[in-house]
Length: 250
Ligand code: MG
Image (cartoon, rainbow, N blue to C red; front, side, top):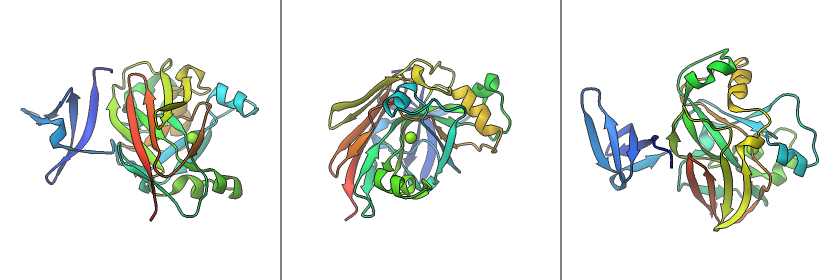
C-alpha cells in the first residue's frame, strides 16, 4: 500500500478527515493532533460530491472487447450524489432491474473549486485518488436512451475506502475486480484512452468543479453481472480495495 491514505470518519457526532497509519488514525487539529484507533471510528465515503462525473469507454482494451472505435473525445455522464455509498456499504439491487453489473474504475476526488485547469496543472486541484464501482442496471441502460436511471439508483456509486496520495503517478497501476473472490476484471490504467490530467482539463473547461466532486475514469474489459449476495471488490494498486455486497431491495 502507498504511504499516504486519508479517510473520512465519524466519531460520536463529529465528522473529520484523518490520516490512516496501520490501525491508527491521526487527526490534525492545527496546533495539535488526536490519534484514534481505526476500529473505534465509523468510516464514511471519502467525499460528499456536488456531482459525480463519469467517463464512458475510456480503456483501449475495453473498446477492443466491445469492437468499438476509440473515441475522439471523452464521453461524459453524471451520477447523482445520492448514489454514493462507502466501503462495505450495501449495493441495493433495485426491483426495476433484472441485470445489474459492476464496473471497477479509478476515481479522482477534487480538492478545491476550480475551472479551466490545464492538464499540466491538474495535480494542483486533486485531493487524491480512490476506487469506484460504476454499478449499472444494464437492461435499463439498453432500454432508456439516457443513462440517468440505469446509473443513478441509490447505492450505485460505491467509492473508497480512502483517498490516496494525489502526487503519485497513476498512469501504470494494476486495476482488478473480483466477485466472490474470483477475478473478473484485470487490466492496467496504462490502457486508458484519456488520462487523468486530460480529463481534468476537458471537464473543467466545461463545468466548475467543487471540492469533493468525483471524476470516475472508466472501466477496463470484463464487466459482468452481479447477484444478490455477491461480494464485489475493486482493487487498484497503491490506491486500495473497495468492497461491497449486493442485497435485495426487500
Ligand atoms: Mg463506467
